Length: 127
Image (cartoon, rainbow, N blue to C red; front, side, top):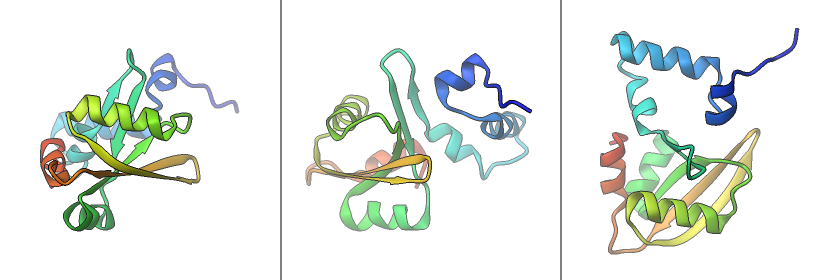
């Protein structure tokens, strides 16, 4: 059996599981998944894909290190990620570390002191 992807799945990178979660959120059946869907920042025209990682460790990093973690496109380099974060959220980035885990690339974005990661997290609905 071949794994065929629809045109929207190819563009957004969402699998059928993501669609099911989105549907549950719209129906109001599953409120726990709502934050994950609302937090996604996908801009197909500009090629931006920033999906905040919402784990206990990531939230502690937001509070302690002024650092926010995103799942990004594997093909994006640090400069591209930095430009995307600065353009989308209107902040200045101090440092970026990246890590590839399985099929995902995680970007650990540390913000400059005058910008607070907790403010971005609040806007995204993480905290």
